[in-house]
Image 1 (tube, rainbow, N blue to C red):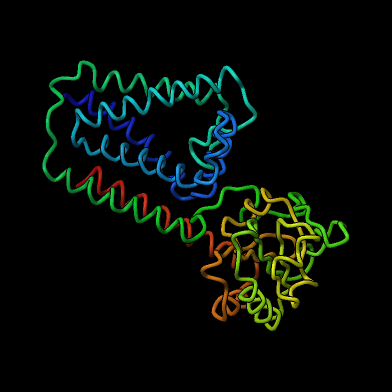
Image 2 (cartoon, rainbow, N blue to C red; image 1 turned 60 degrees about the vertical axis):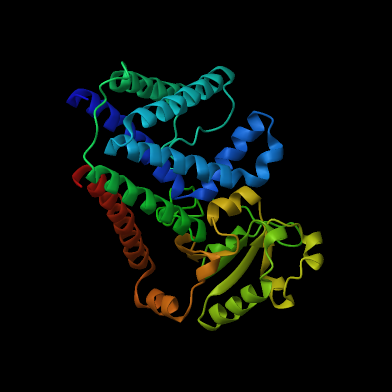
Length: 339
């Protein structure tokens, strides 16, 4: 397989790997996009497993991308990637013609493409595939070490998906990402009397616990414990749920939380924090940091918050998460291109 054909295959692989990786970083967001696709194609009965489907597709996309870059099993990977690109192109052509009000979700939350742009992107990938694999002969064989590099990258991608599924995205590109001013991007939540109460977040230090799926959340006692500890540290604590005020008595909410319980739209809470029961720290109306429910803030977090000004704390956290994600992508690149 000559150099030009390998370059075309590698370029195609880079696009697929990056697209898959960005969705693996945010399985909940990928599941939301999958919900829109299922609704569009009248497959709503599959919405219960939309996150699983989205994660599986993102993992397949990134693995095929890694295989194209490494150049392993070239004939098989050529056929698999060709089928994948053909299906993507047909799908985006349908969307381009129908023009539904939805995002393709190709690159997660970081890049939003129109249906025309998505179709053009897929047509370019199709052209690269043709240049790389037609005619499908004399594709050559990679060095044996490339199978090792693909295996390491595949294992890393699976572990990255597992990490992302148990936490919140390393990098947040949603409308409620850290640094967002809620005065400009309000949450629109209301109290038991249906009076909007966003002003509660505009002053002071607040920890917001958001529960976007109350049917699956059974840990209100743990939330009550967290609320007591956070209040003792000087934070206001607000519980936001997707239920209505009339639903509260049947949910088993700890009575200690009722005075600080408010209600919001499910999509808003999913955007605020990808973890069901996750915590978001807001200072004077600005989002500073988020935690998943599995790792609620504790004494060390409170101490770190008090040591720095809110903006300094925000910047230090963003630098850390940026460094972690960049480190992982550099690690993958080194394995696939240099090993």
